[in-house]
Image (cartoon, rainbow, N blue to C red):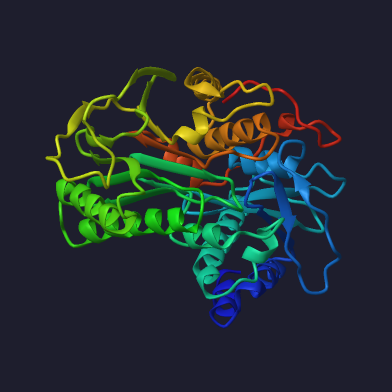
Length: 412
């Protein structure tokens, strides 16, 4: 199975990866159909497979496939001939789900079946990510409407929405998916140092996008050339001042987290204060390290420090989240943001699912049309949650009713 997928993928175009996954599954007598998440993360969209019948999109909130995506766990299909939905991830970045069926059914309690499912779904996810930069075959399927040029430029400059390594989970989300302009986020991990940034440039047009993209590039250039956080701040300041023309500026938070100790150093340039979550609750705002906005003039970088405890989450966001208004003109507000963070933590949701739900709440509050870009980034330190993205285990029979409907069951 693995050999077939690897050999087939070498010369496959991006759009042929679903066929390669299906052919690999056939070596085990299985059939497999790939679904990818749309860019707003509401629907699972079927990818065409040669010779297979057409399939319909599936809602994330109301289907078993959606449950698989939300929880990053395998879920039985519940049909007469048992099959299984498998999460498809690249590392920890959720890409979609895989529907697998076999003539004799799928027994997820069998360790050999579990291992084969894990290899097929995870290797398939890596192949999708590896091939996607070389073509548009799969990205086009994920679009439910056209993107603006500004949004196209910005999105191709951003890192994947989720990343995990030993002791760290990072998840990000940027809205709106199709016409975002001047928000940006970035992260990077080198040895034990985690680099974090959220940026909000002025303007909701292509000029704002260009400014945000240049600031993002300046920050990366500084750190990749071995410069420290102070030099990164100066690089962003210079590029915004040079290209903003004394008319456009940027707010932002830049930080470094030492994964060996939990020490967070950060600087805030006129931006909303990050939130610190501990034991599932927002315990404080990280409101130190203040300076003027980028582009208004150089000033000495004075960094604040916060010592994290294992399991802490740091939440960075732009004002487009809390300043979103409903039809009555009421702000979304920081209080509601904190309330949603608390509910997600109480439900044991991983960071990517937490942000997906918050983003939809922000969008729905404004009727699906944002007045401003909205960005969220969550970094969770010293946790074992990263391992939930890397294993496909068995599913207990009592998790599903005989008709495949979800049951409420205690969390394991």
